[in-house]
Length: 163
Image 1 (cartoon, rainbow, N blue to C red):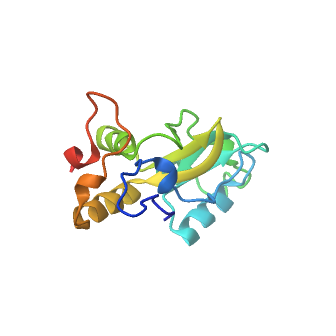
Image 2 (spheres, helix red, strand yellow):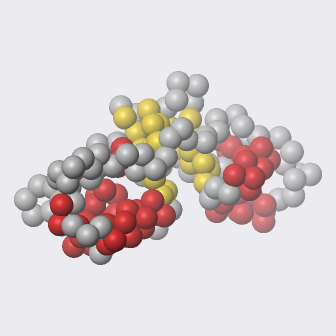
């Protein structure tokens, strides 16, 4: 996990860019499905971002997508299957400058496990529900959790209100 930006007890901005994982393990639309499956199993990932040649996010391939493929066909029937055929193209993303409370709300209100982190459409990281859980745990352990106020606007809920 990257440095959170907390310096000498100063109030920090709780932003996604401080907790994102980078570099991101990803595949391309032309990646064979079997290769994506092997990567996911070997690296213990429940999903992978799919990026084009320019690094722009074009989809996600998840365990769920692959489970559907595996249940509907055998490898012998689809040896040439590519990620593009099975990936989800409508992907929820989050900007790297978004607040961690915003990310927490998205995980809380939507059935997603990961959020690709983008900057100008380019994939620059990924955060997971586990990352948010880790931040909340760390905040609860922090003796002076009141310092962690985030960069919220009037009427927003602070992260500590979510926990």
